[in-house]
Image 1: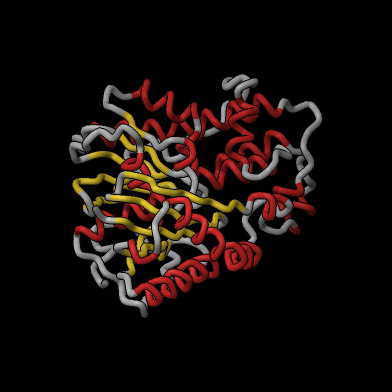
Image 2: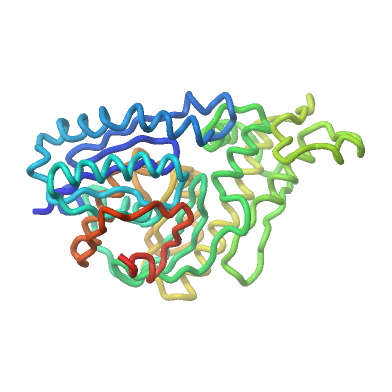
Length: 356
């Protein structure tokens, strides 16, 4: 039995969890910062790192207590090394290093994206995986399409060229004056809207497996806001869409439904095609946007392959997924030096851990 403490602080969730054998959650504690960032309409890095520093000790202690274990009973400490916000990552990494030194336990620096993949291993009851599988990671900061040939073996097929899907949800949410984060509020509004009200573009509908959502966001902005004069447009700063004036005759529900349909259409289309081309046995969806019910339903309808996604509480950032990924890296012999640093732009592929 291998018991691992996981720590996650890559963005705006301070989390700690204890996971046994990569499958069983002993505890999973998450301190959310949503209320802190709501007034900014997105994550404010300095606020995030400060909140992590204030919360992390209590979160880890709560996770240990809830799991009913002591630090001496742990086999290893795992922490998110990247990708993510530098300041936020540093809080988690430095705390994890302190715990590792205090307990004389091995430390594993884990890729956040790989954590999302291994959230699928925490579903109960667990069904064994027959590789290869097609993995679609969709979150606020990432949209990645991967072929997972085995544990630790990834081929990146494509990804976003600009905004991630979750980022597009947040930006459109701001345009529609919906609360942060945009995803769940757009989904809720979209249930009462007509998906055919607006014909928003499905960008990068080509043979590649790349995605683009910035043009979709711009199309929504042009449709739903009062268009400024040429002089105003010339002097407008980047990010000014959140200050645009919403047209009074627009149905927010219809816009939300049509936008959500555009995002999910292209995600499903490319994932299903890639799964067929590469001979995947099933499709995994992970990350915050994997909670979207339209995405789940469309993926099941588009392919005859089995489709897996995490339970709702494991879709967003959490530490149980980091500990689960660490279990399999532990079995592959990963041990990270206490001198390691953050990797804010750390890609997930076959070379990810080769220099450790």
